[in-house]
Structure formats: structure tokens, C-alpha cells
Length: 185
Image (cartoon, rainbow, N blue to C red):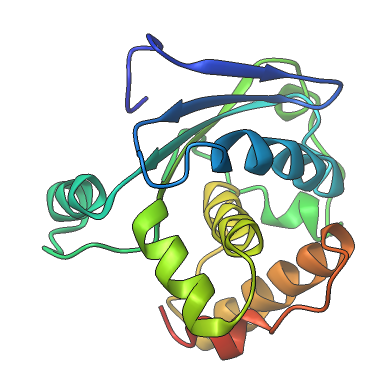
């Protein structure tokens, strides 16, 4: 995990566990609002029993992580660090039944890091709310934890379709499709 568990807030609910580490100062209330919606995303994906670590940080912190783990020395909006060896895509896409060991309580899915600075800029640029942009980034990161990717054209289409379907189920306002927003990340 990205942290040792100190100074975190555990968001327990009927759905999964999201360990929130909020190290940014730009939007102090964003984390709590995001966790509430993020739990709904876990439910939509059938991931009611998983644990996900969520770090909210600034551009400097995400730049450091991006340089260390991806050798890209610039800030980005979201990073994902999966913990499972097995991709969950076939189960989420209902191509295969869920194996029991992946549906057990306390399965650590991985870590998601979101730069709140970049989130705020992107929300303003695309004309939607900061929480909607944070939710977009959460969904994108979560799908990476599940094994979705956008390296190949076919993968990109599948991932974008899943992102858009999830966002339509979760958000109450009409949102711009991710393919328009982020193009080819």
C-alpha cells in the first residue's frame, strides 16, 4: 500500500471499505463526498467486499509517484496500483462467474491516487462539478485496479464504455463522455 494506515479515515458502509488518506489542502470536503459516491461504484461493479485505498494529493505528490513508478516526470490526474494478480474484467463483463476467493471479505483490490489540483482544473475546463470529475477519476482508477486498460484500441473501447455506463448509473446530472474528456490517456 502507499501508506502505513496511519492518519487515514476508514469509510465503512454496507459496501466495501475505502481507506481515505487526504493529504491535499485545496478541497478539504472533497474526500468525504467522493467516498460516498465511490461506494456506489463498488456496488455497481459487484465489488461489495473489497478494500481500496484512496489517496487524495496535490500535483507535486502525484508527479513524484508518476516519476517513480511510471518513469513519467509530470503530474497526472489519477494513478492506480493493483494488488491482485488476476484481472476482474471477465467477471465484471459477466463472461465468467465470480470465483469465491475474489468475492470474500477483505480482498485488497489496490490503491488509487488522485491529484485534486488536476481534478479541479479538469472540472473547470470541461464545465462540470469537481465531485463529478473526482468520481470520473475514481471510476477510471478503479477499472485499472480491476484489470481494464487502454493500451490497445479494443481495450480502450471496452474501458471507456464501462466508465460511461458506471457514471450514468451513479450521477444524476448529464455528464460529458470520458472519450471526449480525456481522449487517449
